[in-house]
Image (cartoon, rainbow, N blue to C red):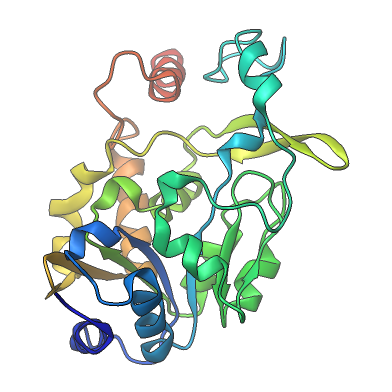
Length: 264
């Protein structure tokens, strides 16, 4: 079993310094943690001046009857899903896919959350990043953190959940998608929805020279500086526009990108 002080020591061993971080984490990867997710979040806030995590809410999403072509969505297929969609509110829990650590950060008394109805972020000490997000630029919080010299932490998880690589895709010119969300003001169109991330672990060898690593309990914790990481992936995607796509032949988003590349 590990506790708050073990997590604290592990995070300090990364020698990041006074930099903000965006965190992706799996609590179960650590083994048993005394105090659970609260201990991990407490250690993060004790070490770093700003901590942010994705708190996306996919249950707000709707599938319309029609829309733009090559949008990686089957129009008219979501009637049952649409009936179950929920209105976005700032106190809506993060999707379970985000994990309990981002949700615990969202519920922290000092935390703030951005207002994107699908792709929100939450954090403490990252007000400029959260304020930068708009419907048209959902990844702006990551860009702001990058400009502030921020780092990404992968705590017991790999690059398939590294949301920051989506910013590299956007900068490199990779196709983005349009999605729709249910809000208290009505149905809202959400441009700039990113592609699939299941192929992102293919970037690990390329990013290894930038990576700092430590062990906390059973979890391997990796830290990468955002700006060099994104710069390296942008260059990689411009050299090979099909890089980091997943290998699932039924993936609608990766198929749409390959279709666009083939027609270019």
